[in-house]
Length: 340
Image (cartoon, rainbow, N blue to C red):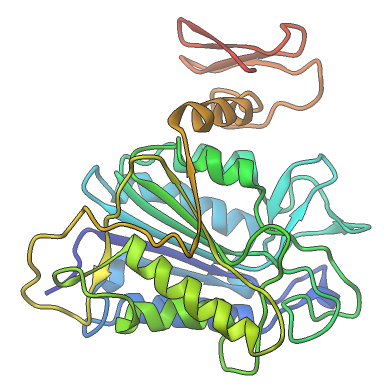
């Protein structure tokens, strides 16, 4: 049996064309192992043709955006997307948060605008998906000066976890969105002494059966709880703190993200599974998520381009009107919404 609804985009950026001091070689191995695990028929059961892996020189800005743009044509409402990114997350010269690509460029300690995948661009691509189940896993919380933290170059890059407001906005790109980040915003993601980083090893071990069996499936909540405890314990062995964080809308339950050890006859998935209070869970109200999401979409034109500057004004067909002089008013189609 295959997990036929499963689609995955796995990205690992460990080598940089213009940022060699900040290479993280283990990132490509992390990503490749996640992709291999997902498409293993004896483990997660994702169809091999539905798993896309981009690492190092293949993970350019253009390639990542192209892969994201190709997803809507491959997926429908019943699809599940497992989106995994490991690499640096850095603020740009334009103030936006960026997931880095192989060809990202630095100006000081900031990413040059337009040389990575910005927060607004990521939101724009994901809001085009009809899939009602998406698990976004980001390991971009690297801010250490010394190995074994992820920032092992000669100089600290101040790589950071995605801002919490981005995680909140991602929940409004469609139904059934859940995000997992490798640690809390004030913490670091640690490599440790193994073949994989501590966080990715926990993800892989969970997918291989370390997470609970939910009637033949691994659930998003079950995977997260396993990853939380394993990552926390792994960091404690180094004398450090690392607590992966899950962000979800209040009232939204789990969904299957893979088969459990290649189950051939799974039962009816238990959607009433709950999360332990011991973990780092952020439950966001739909109203707050929508409010933050609208703030992000105020920077996009109708065709997904970014509007720059206070005077930016752009109108897309049936899309968003942005006017720097309208005190934050956003016109979407025939509806007015206030970006408060």
